[in-house]
Length: 340
Image (cartoon, rainbow, N blue to C red; front, side, top):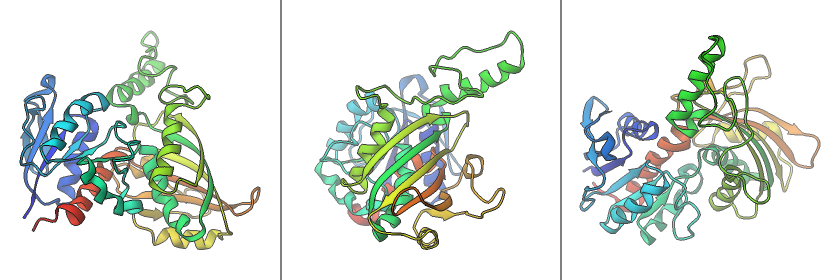
């Protein structure tokens, strides 16, 4: 017996990926509804070998539906998530709206699947920020072995994390550089993104960090361990899809790089590609369309006691958003709803 599943925001990048991954992983669906705003009403989206026509989220009745995967942003989520949850439909939300609510579980299934049972508090489960999700997948098995004390991370985040307009801006700016008179001024970003990097994602906070950097700190603590100290520098780079991270980890006890490599090879959701030769590592281009969180460049950090360095890469539209949401849905079905 399958589930009645809603995908809200089905015409966006993440919503389309949610539908693709539900079909790829053969999620047990009895009925599926693709919802969109009125401006996209009637648009067609693919679900496996089926074509779905989008329905209006504004008038949709969530009664009798088992779960809803939301990819519609914090504003619309604030309006529609309580309506769905109140009708008994469990919301898996990709926005930041509920991530820091203590009554709402923030879940990465490879890391804290047990937290999903708390969803009955509000009938809402939060999906973490894309950059946090891939990092905690890599950190969890190492934390279980040697207890992480501190994390210093620099991210290299693709433009798809900022939506379709950001991807379009990178494309048109890149073309414009090579065609005199067709240069494109920044609109989505604060500075030129083509052939450039921008150390600014989301808004600035009073202490000089950006909201994206704050998210990584707060979410890592909530998902993995509140005792871990985290500092982040988040950077937008001219890559279409795929986030990368240089992660420096300080442990409470010594962890040899060879043991760390073997632990990660056995860890769920992780794929180690770590050869000390040219090309013996994974880059964003190679992770696009893949499920795994890739870890490379595993090595001892001689400048601190009990330190390791890692290079972590993942498809942000998948593990950073749509895949994690579908994995939450799978865990929800196995641990809470349990049909069939």
